[in-house]
Length: 190
View 1 (cartoon, rainbow, N blue to C red):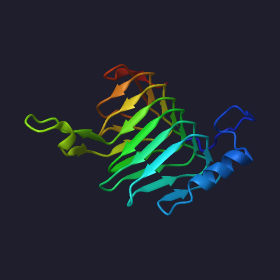
View 2: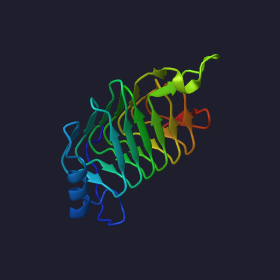
View 3: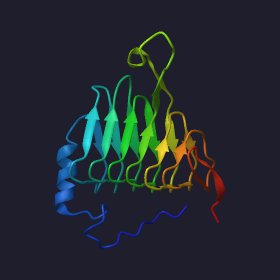
View 4: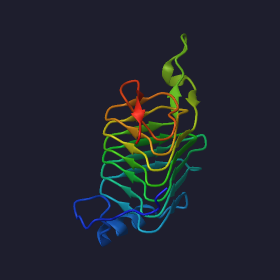
């Protein structure tokens, strides 16, 4: 795998590491539950909500765009963004157990990644039922188009490309392109 990322001088990009963006990231992550790597960028209006026992680990050179929402709720939530991960504008990451996103992965705007779902048995209010929780693992060097949804228990291999609006409900092998709702195999990456 290529271990180099080119950073272009583009002040409109979320990868632009202005002093203001780096200061905002440092200030907003002054919390014992958050571990942050070097040169982390956090754009304005990002909402981070953490349970008492939550662990949010953000690697080197990661960026989170405006209006993203990270919600780590009980029982034992952990979200790991490895180095150079980019989270697009308005993306939601909701964890009750474990979500891991590999190096160099680019998540487009308005995506949603959940490691839980509600039980829906008859005879009891849905809001009173226990959550069904299964970890989500996303490999390295993936690209998710706008509006992708990742459901609980999914493992996505390295180098996967997901088309805009895809809903991923099952595991995807490395270096494949998938699209649709539910997502289906399109072709191998060349």
